[in-house]
Picture 1 (cartoon, rainbow, N blue to C red):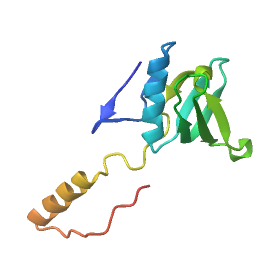
Picture 2: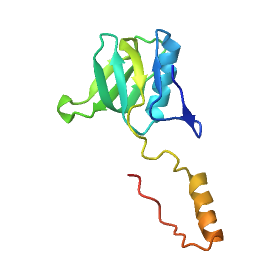
Picture 3: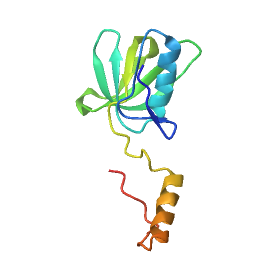
Picture 4: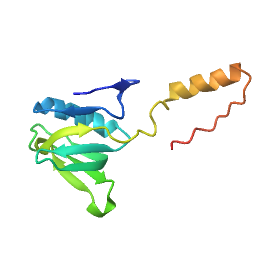
Length: 126
Protein backbone atom coordinates (compact mmCIF):
# COMPACT_ATOMS: atom_id res chain seq x y z
CA UNK A 1 0.00 0.00 0.00
CA UNK A 2 1.39 3.35 -1.06
CA UNK A 3 -0.58 6.02 0.78
CA UNK A 4 0.80 9.53 0.29
CA UNK A 5 -1.39 12.32 1.63
CA UNK A 6 -1.54 16.07 1.20
CA UNK A 7 -3.65 18.20 3.55
CA UNK A 8 -5.11 14.94 4.94
CA UNK A 9 -6.26 13.77 1.49
CA UNK A 10 -5.03 10.94 -0.69
CA UNK A 11 -3.03 12.31 -3.63
CA UNK A 12 -2.35 11.28 -7.20
CA UNK A 13 -0.03 8.28 -7.42
CA UNK A 14 -1.35 6.62 -4.26
CA UNK A 15 -2.46 3.00 -4.57
CA UNK A 16 -4.12 0.47 -2.28
CA UNK A 17 -4.00 -3.26 -2.94
CA UNK A 18 -4.40 -6.51 -1.10
CA UNK A 19 -6.78 -9.12 0.15
CA UNK A 20 -7.83 -7.29 3.32
CA UNK A 21 -11.45 -6.22 2.72
CA UNK A 22 -11.13 -3.33 5.16
CA UNK A 23 -8.21 -1.86 3.19
CA UNK A 24 -10.35 -1.95 0.04
CA UNK A 25 -13.31 -0.44 1.91
CA UNK A 26 -11.11 2.38 3.28
CA UNK A 27 -9.53 3.00 -0.14
CA UNK A 28 -12.96 3.24 -1.76
CA UNK A 29 -14.04 5.77 0.87
CA UNK A 30 -11.00 7.88 -0.12
CA UNK A 31 -11.69 7.29 -3.82
CA UNK A 32 -15.24 8.57 -3.42
CA UNK A 33 -13.91 11.84 -1.96
CA UNK A 34 -11.17 12.12 -4.60
CA UNK A 35 -12.05 14.51 -7.42
CA UNK A 36 -9.72 13.01 -10.01
CA UNK A 37 -9.83 9.74 -11.90
CA UNK A 38 -9.04 6.42 -10.26
CA UNK A 39 -8.05 3.10 -11.77
CA UNK A 40 -9.78 0.04 -10.37
CA UNK A 41 -8.04 -3.28 -10.96
CA UNK A 42 -10.43 -6.21 -10.84
CA UNK A 43 -9.47 -9.61 -9.49
CA UNK A 44 -9.44 -10.95 -13.07
CA UNK A 45 -6.74 -8.38 -13.96
CA UNK A 46 -8.89 -6.04 -16.05
CA UNK A 47 -8.62 -2.33 -15.30
CA UNK A 48 -11.22 0.42 -15.40
CA UNK A 49 -10.09 4.05 -15.26
CA UNK A 50 -12.53 6.86 -14.60
CA UNK A 51 -14.35 9.00 -12.10
CA UNK A 52 -15.88 7.15 -9.14
CA UNK A 53 -19.22 8.92 -8.69
CA UNK A 54 -21.21 6.56 -6.45
CA UNK A 55 -20.56 3.97 -3.77
CA UNK A 56 -22.78 1.81 -1.63
CA UNK A 57 -21.01 0.62 1.48
CA UNK A 58 -23.30 -2.03 2.96
CA UNK A 59 -22.85 -4.36 5.94
CA UNK A 60 -21.33 -7.08 3.80
CA UNK A 61 -18.73 -6.65 1.09
CA UNK A 62 -20.80 -8.73 -1.28
CA UNK A 63 -23.62 -6.17 -1.09
CA UNK A 64 -21.25 -3.19 -1.43
CA UNK A 65 -20.47 -1.67 -4.82
CA UNK A 66 -19.11 1.37 -6.65
CA UNK A 67 -20.14 3.00 -9.89
CA UNK A 68 -17.57 4.59 -12.16
CA UNK A 69 -17.77 6.76 -15.29
CA UNK A 70 -14.91 5.41 -17.42
CA UNK A 71 -12.57 7.73 -19.30
CA UNK A 72 -13.83 5.88 -22.40
CA UNK A 73 -17.41 7.19 -22.65
CA UNK A 74 -18.43 4.39 -25.02
CA UNK A 75 -18.30 1.96 -22.07
CA UNK A 76 -21.11 3.70 -20.18
CA UNK A 77 -21.29 3.67 -16.42
CA UNK A 78 -19.82 0.56 -14.81
CA UNK A 79 -20.86 -1.07 -11.53
CA UNK A 80 -18.21 -3.06 -9.64
CA UNK A 81 -18.73 -4.98 -6.40
CA UNK A 82 -16.20 -4.59 -3.59
CA UNK A 83 -15.13 -8.27 -3.62
CA UNK A 84 -14.25 -7.91 -7.34
CA UNK A 85 -11.65 -5.18 -6.58
CA UNK A 86 -8.01 -6.09 -5.97
CA UNK A 87 -6.39 -2.65 -6.27
CA UNK A 88 -7.31 1.03 -6.42
CA UNK A 89 -4.93 3.59 -7.92
CA UNK A 90 -5.43 7.32 -7.66
CA UNK A 91 -4.29 7.79 -11.23
CA UNK A 92 -5.74 11.14 -12.29
CA UNK A 93 -4.89 14.61 -11.06
CA UNK A 94 -7.27 16.02 -8.45
CA UNK A 95 -8.08 19.44 -9.96
CA UNK A 96 -8.98 20.89 -6.56
CA UNK A 97 -5.94 19.62 -4.62
CA UNK A 98 -4.43 22.38 -2.51
CA UNK A 99 -7.32 24.73 -3.25
CA UNK A 100 -8.95 24.71 0.16
CA UNK A 101 -10.55 27.79 1.63
CA UNK A 102 -7.68 28.12 4.12
CA UNK A 103 -5.07 28.05 1.33
CA UNK A 104 -7.02 30.66 -0.67
CA UNK A 105 -7.22 33.02 2.34
CA UNK A 106 -3.50 32.55 3.07
CA UNK A 107 -2.51 33.33 -0.56
CA UNK A 108 -4.87 36.33 -0.64
CA UNK A 109 -3.37 37.75 2.58
CA UNK A 110 0.20 37.13 1.37
CA UNK A 111 -0.50 39.05 -1.86
CA UNK A 112 -2.13 41.95 0.02
CA UNK A 113 0.74 42.18 2.51
CA UNK A 114 3.28 42.14 -0.34
CA UNK A 115 1.42 45.01 -2.03
CA UNK A 116 0.40 42.85 -4.96
CA UNK A 117 -3.03 42.89 -6.59
CA UNK A 118 -5.27 40.34 -4.88
CA UNK A 119 -8.70 39.49 -6.23
CA UNK A 120 -11.65 37.77 -4.64
CA UNK A 121 -12.17 35.85 -7.89
CA UNK A 122 -11.44 32.15 -7.53
CA UNK A 123 -8.63 30.41 -9.37
CA UNK A 124 -9.40 28.18 -12.35
CA UNK A 125 -9.50 24.50 -11.43
CA UNK A 126 -7.81 23.24 -14.60
